[in-house]
Length: 233
Image (cartoon, rainbow, N blue to C red; front, top):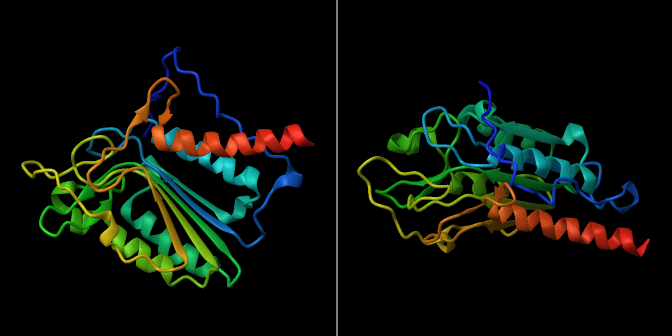
């Protein structure tokens, strides 16, 4: 399946397309791990604009920060099926994580609620919001799995939303959007979560820059740190 280039318009000007860290400034260690997921072109759902390129760019940044290529799992579009996400988040991480590992998980794509239970789900490439329990990957499952890793600390970054009200969220046909309490999730103590939206908000894109709004400012902050360190050398 060929990805449709969502940022072909000549007016789009990204200023974060290259990380600004030299090898001497890397902060990650040999056993640190990253799972990066970006789903833009779904099997049977609307696109999540810029998620494909944002995921690839996040990989460039984590490599610049010192993550080893062998310790990075990148899943995009048709490679980010439910089974592939389960394998990476539950089997691959479990097999590789050590007591001193730091783990980074990034997701850009659609989220969805279960209108009956209020549970929030990541939507894989082959996900269906009408059968989200069976085809989605729940945040509860994500946090529970990451909390059981023999790792020192885990950072989860979600450029998605989960109410079904638009933006990077979808919902079963005929269901109403939900106001969800994202604070109700039990997050293990070693897991930190940074999300683009709360339960009643919509995650947006930054059309002028060709990125997800949340990812753009996250990477811009990192790039600014790298630029500052380069100036001080």
